[in-house]
Length: 242
Image (cartoon, rainbow, N blue to C red; front, side, top):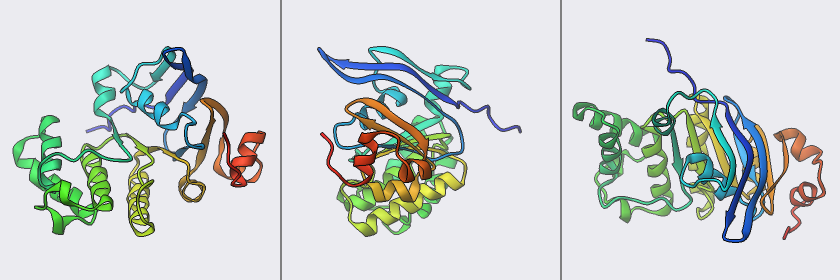
C-alpha cells in the first residue's frame, strides 16, 4: 500500500486576526514544509498560541488564508493533524481509557484500540499508570499522556502549544524526548515556546513573532547567530520585550 499523500506544505498567507477592534495578528506570511522542526518563538503575548489555533482550525482568521497545499478534503486535513496544549484536558477516564476513547472517535475497530493504546502508553513511559484516573496524574504525566493520545492518531503534523511551560526540568526533558522521537518518526513538529534554551535544543527553523507580527523566519542557527531585527536580537540576548 502506498503512503498517503501529504497535506503539507502549510501556507499562511496574509493572515490577520482581530478581536473586536484590536488586531492581534498582522499580515502573517510564511510557508512551512515537511521535515524541519518549526519553533514559533517570541515573548508572552506575541501571538504564538493564537497562530497555532488558527493553523489547527480552532479559530477562523479575520482575513487571509491558511492553506494545506497537499490536501484533498477538509476532513482529511483534520484527521492528519493533532494538537497538544499547555494544560491538556484529561477525560474522566483512566490513562488508557483516554487513549482508547480517542481511537473510538476515530472509528478504529475495537479489537485494535487496546493494542494501540498500550503501545502509546509504553512509548510515553506510562504503562505502569494505565489504570490510574488521568486527572489524578501529575502535570508531567498528564502532558506525556496528552502526547501519547495525540501520537496514537498517527498525525502527519503535530502542533504543540508551550507543552512544558509549567513543568519541572525532569518532566521537560521527558516531554522533549518524546517530541524528538515523533520528529524522528516523520511527524512534522510545529511548536510554540518562549524558552530560548528549548528552542535551541529542538528547532530546525524559527518563526519569530513580536506583538503579533512576523519579524523573522530563518534557520535556527542563523536566527540565533545573526538575528536580523532589533527585536530578535534583544530577545536572543535575554532582554525583555514589550
